[in-house]
Length: 335
Image 1: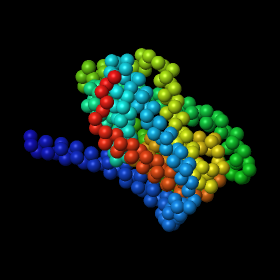
Image 2: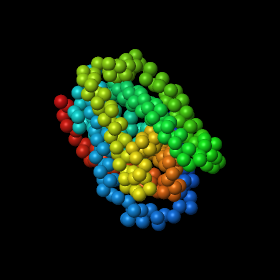
Image 3: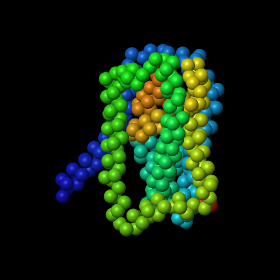
Image 4: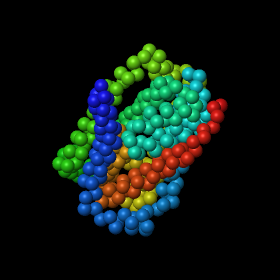
């Protein structure tokens, strides 16, 4: 019996280590490949002289607003189930969720439910159901945004190719074998994560009560009292994310002229790249956004500089919000 327990504990430890190590290793491999031979002294020059910090600072409030709105929307979804945690408890849980996901990808969804269970007494099975609801709503919105962007940008792509003499074959030819390897590997990881999540869903079926709570959370959106406010929060979240990203284009001379439509294309592509379970999308996001920028005429080194600095600074903001949430352990009383 004791040998069986030791083996089980070892298996759990190995699985925990792999959940942390593999995403970090995957991100590190992509970043190493992208920045091998990179002149690192150029980063200091870009930060000191080339970068317009005013625009970066102007983008920060939108990054904060996106998380605040997500917390307020979450509270609204919990209300139909009789759960009324404080607004700050929900926002703080979101801050901690995103901050913790920088260390262990995807752990934040469980963590924020745990924080709310401790601070507001909300059952985890119920809050998990509302998290799934939120993700479904977000997926619908991003798919709709993707469809609109693709349809809207078809003429832009045609004009761009006509002016530059590029063709689909030429664009494909610009990918190196390693580039194709990264793209395929990212797709495999996303598929594997989806399969893993589906396999783990049986955990919620162990008891009828847990399954009922989960379903109750999933359907809570139907009973939201102020549906207009709910959709305003939802649109506001993604509008804030977009502005948080778009304003950084004005930080650099080689991206300031690209405009909001190019930023929208890069934003949508980057959003799908973040699905790959690496810390804050590190690696896949860099690769995807840099590829879009190159498609619109940005030099490879400039694109690499842009994604490295923007992602690093915005990740630091996420970490700072996580620390702020961790520092305030005392949640406001439920209202």
